[in-house]
Image (cartoon, rainbow, N blue to C red):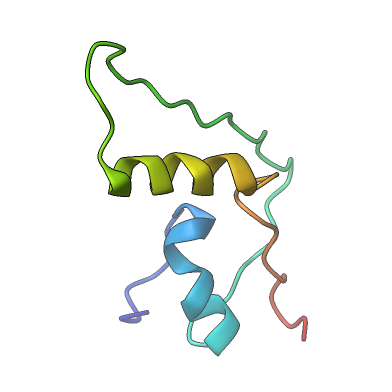
Amino acid sequence: MAGLGLALISEHAVVDDVRAGTLAVLPVSPVPRSRPVNLVRRRDRLLSPAERAFIELLRSVGEWPRELPAAGAP
């Protein structure tokens, strides 16, 4: 975004910038494999309301990160 070249960045970190058109997604071949997201927590500690909400959010996402449009795509 600062005009300094190319970078590999996780999609979830730049989704708003890509949708706004301030960053472009370039195709990479071969396509990197998706990675699972894991949650680790202590069983002997109660979760705060914010922690419970975060876990529910993780469970509701389905597939993450979601696909972003390629460069030049609407």
